[in-house]
Amino acid sequence: EPEVTQTPSHQVTQMGQEVILRCVPISNHLYFYWYRQILGQKVEFLVSFYNNEISEKSEIFDDQFSVERPDGSNFTLKIRSTKLEDSAMYFCASSELAQGREQFFGPGTRLTVL
Amino acid sequence: SQKIEQNSEALNIQEGKTATLTCNYTNYSPAYLQWYRQDPGRGPVFLLLIRENEKEKRKERLKVTFDTTLKQSLFHITASQPADSATYLCALSLILTGGGNKLTFGTGTQLKVEL
Image 1 (cartoon, rainbow over the protein chains, first blue to last red):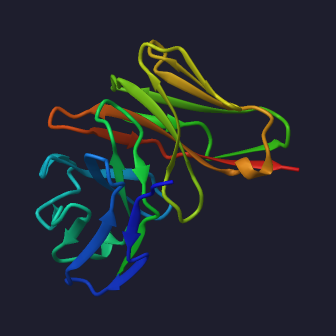
Image 2: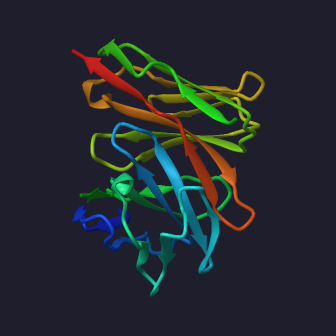
């Protein structure tokens, strides 16, 4: 069964450093998303991406964040200058159809900012 | 402000019983409501989706109801098993004009099914 994959599974970085989190969505999906979950808290929407453009972003997704689909398979989230409060689990998700349909989540990348 | 609440942080039930989880929301008008399962350290896994014009949806041992007047969804697991132990997340699905749909999650209910 096709699945969303994410790398790395765990990333440790120093405050102020740049990180890139990578995702490979399911191949025939058209809509791509990033969510984050701070330990013990709820899953929060960050950004959605369709047709090589951001279609929606949350207040969390400030100028330090960017997303890219550099080729036909990868979808990346970059945090330009990490802060302590960026420590969280980051989930990539994709969906085949737009109309409220289910999203398929990856296993997540645990980001620890020291 | 918009709010999604799920009943109690933890729910313990005996194997074989029916687990009922509640999701209440305010200041939303979702077109869809979805339920996901999340195991520790893992990503959410889709279980069921119900549309605003549907009252009930079933899939195997799972049943979801959606009352847009009460702004509430109930999620039932019948004949529960220890393997059903996980956190269950309610998510409101809002269709984005630019494409895709945004999921807004509740905090989840941790279900533990005991032998």
